[in-house]
Image (cartoon, rainbow, N blue to C red; front, side, top):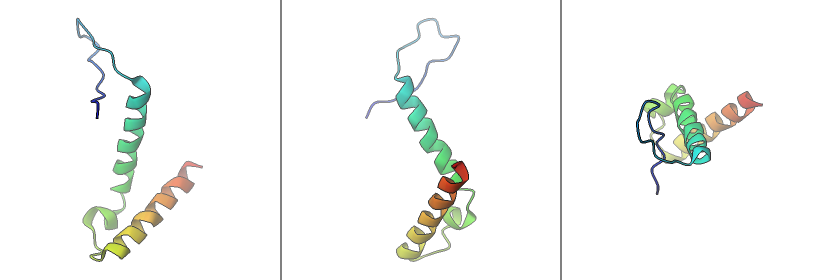
Length: 68
């Protein structure tokens, strides 16, 4: 793994980073933030793995439809 952290704008000697990889990482982080909005996933009411994964799939489908 390679860390993808942009330098601060006021840094004297900024380093190079992969901007495309940073954008992809940001999208994934925002997806996890939106998934935490589903309280059932965040608190994990479904104690069984199959129930938890089923609701996780449901939440991902809802998010995919919300984007379209």
